[in-house]
Amino acid sequence: MNRGSDERPEPLNVRDYERLAREAMHPAAWAYYSAGAGDEVTLRRERDAFEKLLLVPRVLRGVDHADTSASVLGAPIRAPIMVAPTGVQGLAHPEGECATARGAGEAGTLMAVSTVSSRRLEDVAAAATGPLWFQLYVYEGARPFAETLVRRAERAGYGAIVLTVDAPRWGRKERFLRVEDELPPGASAVSIEEELGEEAREPAALTPEDVAWLRSSTGLPIVLKGILHPEDAALAVEHGVEGVVVSTHGGRQLDGVPASVEALPAVVEAVAGRAEVYMDGGIRRGTDVLKALALGARAVFVGRPVLWGLAADGAAGVGRVLEMLREELELAMILAGLPDLESVGPDLARKG
Image (tube, rainbow, N blue to C red; front, side, top):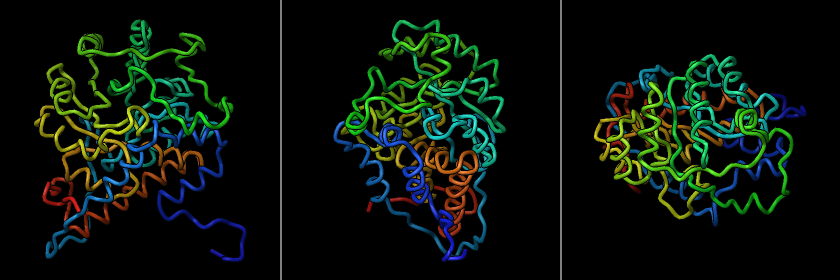
């Protein structure tokens, strides 16, 4: 590139997209996406925990290429890196979740679509070229509405329901509260508003009976998102779920909890192969993905970095962020002497 030109240099990593996204977004929208709960201890810990984990590579393995392909609940994906459910993506880009779905499909991976999507879940499905899961919030006194969303997701071809279980109330995000009171255009949650109107809704405090109810309401696989305690993971499996997501909700709910990657090994042990285990939180490099896999995750979800790509360059930015992470994972696998994901084991990562 001509250094004398006005063009910006191409991003080299996910963090470069963070800077571009912040420049592109309204300050209130940026604060909404980037904020954590309380003092943001957990938000910071998500990164600190990855940085304290070290990879221990093997050599003399003759590995000069690596296969990153994976599958989740039987769906093949190009790499074990999926798009986490994040709400009101119209704040980042006019096409919102529809652009994200196209970018995820171009990257050969799966997207989980939020209940509070700024685009109708049917419209996101129409735009998608890859597999979709639907993330479900159950609101207080609104089981019929949840059932309606599940039926719509089934008809639109979504492959699983991701029930979020860590939000009996919304976490207090003070960094967001310190900026403008109202978000800019794009903050509407279309699928909710067309069914329930624009009135604010409180989430329900869920119990195992709610999981059993959902299990009886759909034939789709069920994944529980927001698990940190191994006993909760075991309870989820006992209620017939096919997957769990170890998650702190991006550090946006209870502050002061362990990072997802810190909680991951105990959850994997408790599940004992009876369901698939995923995690989200703090993924910024392909080496982070590899560390999570070494600790037992089948795949990871990525949230904020996808939003950065979306804000910076729409569907193309989403696809590039995901491909950057895949390329970094592939390189890390080669340098660690790993020809495929089946070769990844617990001896690969240790605490520094």
